[in-house]
Length: 241
Ligand code: CAA
Image (tube, rainbow, N blue to C red; front, side, top):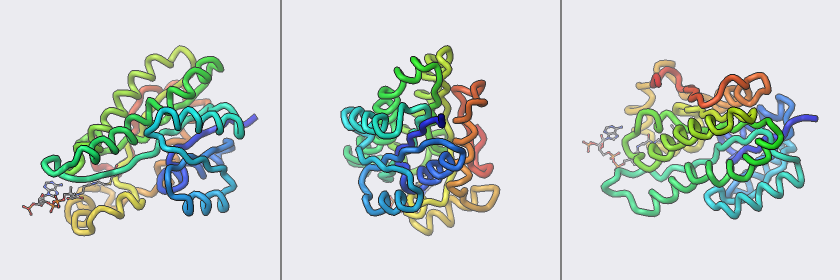
């Protein structure tokens, strides 16, 4: 019986690459998404991976959504908390909604989602939780007090839950991607990207979503039980943490 993997934000960007790589590695995959129906349907048609729509910033929506995934696909063995948004602004101009949206979606979702699956994983004595954090949670980023705080919080959450889960065969790890070639990074003003970001990446290019997916497949494997509480940096040498 193949294991079941659930990817939040799994129909676009890094999440879509993760979903496809997990499918290729033999998992039964379910992909959550929040709003873009057109992209989700296209992804489903191309991959055959079932898609489930709910908002990961809502605990109740996560409870309902996971229940549906478990009924249709099976109990979740691997949870990949990938869903995330940006609302970039310098703090002196940041609105409360920009702060709250990023904290609730990027960090609140780790509680909202992990809480739904952790009891089952503990009972079955196997589980993998992989949290997609960011280089900007490690180093901080101009214009991202909200995002940097949420992403740093994800690393703390990972380390704490790893300790709680170790005796139950459940590993919890974080991956910190650098700047990856996705819509999120393409939305950064061209001048900022070319002048302030690309020159700081030693490999001289953005990362590709598939390069992050490869890290997830590694951490999700049954054979990766020794790795827990780790923060895996994949950023082209931009920052060593
Ligand atoms: N460090 C230091 N100073 C900077 C800076 C930086 N990184 N970026 C801009 N500044 C300076 C500018 O040079 C400018 O200075 P002057 O007025 O002296 O010329 C001043 O700050 C104002 O800059 P902007 O005109 O850009 O300010 P703004 O308020 O209009 O916009 C911003 C600010 C929205 C933060 C914009 O700069 C921006 O979008 N920056 C990109 C932020 C970023 O990297 N986001 C990452 C998104 S991708 C992602 O999050 C994925 C991931 O995990 C990696």
